[in-house]
Length: 455
Ligand code: NDP
Image (tube, rainbow, N blue to C red; front, side, top):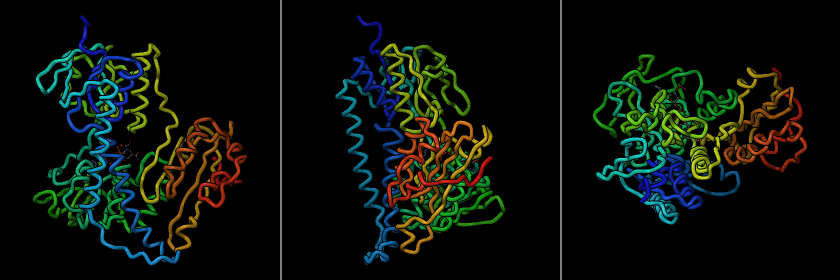
């Protein structure tokens, strides 16, 4: 008789957990079970990247209508139906969840629609009352949005709620200046909501390249978002979500909004999982502490994805899951490379970024900065004030491109490809040797001849 019920028990059916489970079962032939208390697909598929991106697409149609007249089209901006979009998104998520379930089943993974928590280093207890043992346990429980610690904060919504609203508000106050705040400020503005955004610091998108985030902020304001920096919510009062909220800001001014949306960060889902009782060490904010192979303080317990609060992005969780399978089931200890990860912020315009910001690079070594900021052809032809930015931060000593920052429509698509070059260690001269694709916005990335600054 086997010592354990399973070779692997995965807690959490999001991107990282599902990938690890099905690769361990499929490629490595392990006996695997997975427990998910909510919907399969996790944050990315059910309440994050996927529905968000569909909402981004939806929000861009108003601009298309505005630009079309210059091109000879008579496209009138009609009414937007939130119930139609919401219903279509729900159908799409049902389809994707079905795929996730089938992927697990077809790989031979046994799924439990239940909450699981550790009983000890090799045992999980399920909310169904069952107890299962496994040689290895993988915690892939992700994260959740948090609200600030102010009175009546429950009168505000968080990103999980946005996809389920009965109706879009006429006005909304978005709190925060990170990915989620800026993306939803742009999405909701595009869908016709009057958006006010408060950010407590000097500039949104802290940590990203100053010039790039400055242009995103300018463009958000240009499009009509009331973005207020060095401002936060001081207090809020109201009756229930969906009814007007009275807000006092940190300058003492009073306002009324139909809705308040907190995009003030996320926390690891490590509560009440029996982790610390089993010997797993939790760090700041409740993140599960792991080594470079994603092993926790307990030899039989690993953790991947947002619950470890390393780089909280879906493709990173998937990589961590794949590396975990190599380490544990192929006897090939594999560390995930967290360096030079490209990412995109789906604002309007988008921002794509890989590598060091000008500020971080300058602190590290002497650099040259190549940057160009211009009006893109498509919207400039229609008299729109849009601007885009292409920027390379280059090491003076090695000539390597240390950072690439793009603010432009579809910058997410562009940075994926530029990311390959930067990851390969391309030099500025390698970019220069590449012939431009004309006429495109991205050709500017290979035609910048003289540095705008050296430092
Ligand atoms: P972030 O941590 O990126 O941003 C949180 C924002 O809220 C910051 O601007 C922060 O300010 C502010 N904030 C925090 N606490 C308070 C408070 N008490 N009052 C007012 N403001 C506050 O979190 P997000 O929720 O935006 O995103 C979480 C993670 O999800 C991201 O880091 C990213 O990894 C991932 N993500 C990625 C996306 C993508 O790839 N496109 C899209 C969405 C999410 P301050 O800067 O001063 O700390």
